[in-house]
Image (tube, rainbow over all chains, first blue to last red; front, side, top):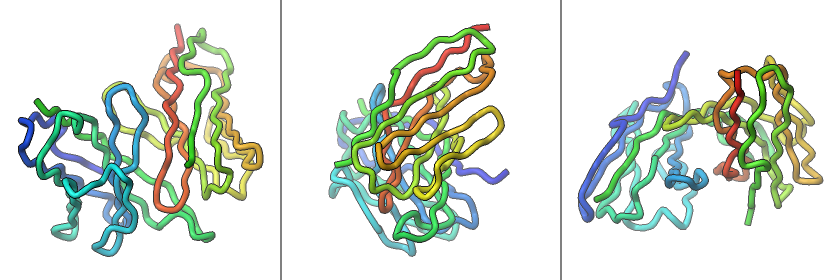
Length: 119
Length: 110
């Protein structure tokens, strides 16, 4: 069964350093998402991406964050200058179609996550 | 702003028991509702998706219901097994994003 994959599984970095988290969505999916979960807290939406551009972002997703689909398979999340409070589990998700708009809806499939630890 | 609440926060039951997990949301204008399972340190596994026009969905021993007007959903697990032990998350979809509850941590004791 196709699945979303993420690398690395665990990333440790120093405060102020740049990190890139990588995801390979399911191959026929067109919509891509990043979420994060700080330890003990809810899963929070960061950004959605379609047709090579951001379609929605949360207030968490500030100028320190960026996303990119550098080729036909990878989807990346970059944090330019990490802060202690960026420590969290970051989940990538993908779906075939966009949910909402009064039309079709679809399941978002999540990857196993990357645990980011900022020291 | 959409808020999702799950009750109880934790639940411990003996194997074989039927159980119900509850989810409530404040804004009824949702597109769908998903139930996920999360094992410790792992990703999210989608269990069931109920579209806004539907009242329930079933998959094996799982049955999820949706009452959009009252802002409630329930996940019913029949004949629970130790392998069902995990955190169960409810999430509602509006526009591009899922808004999650904090989850119910379920422990099924052999």
